[in-house]
Image (cartoon, rainbow, N blue to C red; front, side, top):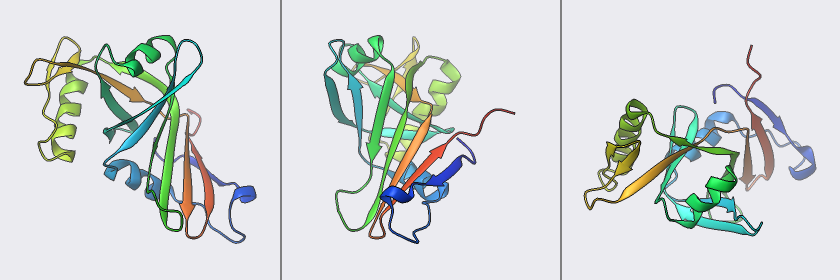
Amino acid sequence: MNDPVTTLDARFSEPGAAPTTWQAAEEVLENAQLSWLATVRADGRPHVTPLVAVWFDGALHFTTGPEEQKAVNLAVNPNVVVTTGTSTWDEGLDVMVEGPALRVTDPGTLERLAAAWRTKWAGQWEYEVGDGAFRNDAGGVALVFAVDPVKVLAFGKGTFTHTRHVPRPAQ
């Protein structure tokens, strides 16, 4: 998501506060060590789980085993929210990405994503690509999903702000 429309919601921001820049929100997404994925079960109950993610080519990417609850949920409803940030009240920035989580199966894209995982995690997450998914050295399969943002919210703390970033309409 490049150059989104950025607006400050004054109802939930301190008087005189400036909106969080897209660059600041994107930096949080790029550097986050842990995020939380919210999905919805088939019966409507929410499900939240921590995971590692990679911000790559304007989308947030994550993996899951085919039998994990998040994969089961996504097969029914692809709409998700991914959150990350700090666990402090008076400083930092929390960022939430909303959008559909769609499978990534293109081999070239998966190869680039595997390299991004290796780079971001300094070799702690090593994946090979095969059959439209990641595979680890133990033979496990990890499905790869991309969340193409329909909205990104940034909540600044210290000076409290509520900023919305949305993609610009296609020209």
